[in-house]
Image (cartoon, rainbow, N blue to C red; front, side):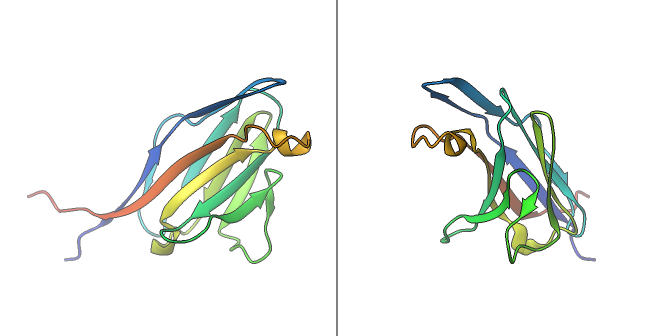
Length: 136
């Protein structure tokens, strides 16, 4: 039969500091899902800031998916949803498709809100579809 596909999420942690004090964004753990399943990506900030989510596919510019934590950009599939609880932010991808592979970024919008050009924080999450071999 067909080999299953495995969807792997690679996790990175990023830190940036800014003149008003340090804001840290972290994402613990890793997530996996089969095609057609769902994936949840979490970002946590150290201060009460907003969050934007982006997806960058190979050879393309980053695409803005979610702004102000929960609002989908025009033209973005409703399979993508953003939510927040305090300083915890979540991006959920439902009915995962092969085309969803790429690098996902969460970016705090603290610096944008304060009209500062300094020190945006980016966290990246590489979502890779791998063909898994059956172990006999």
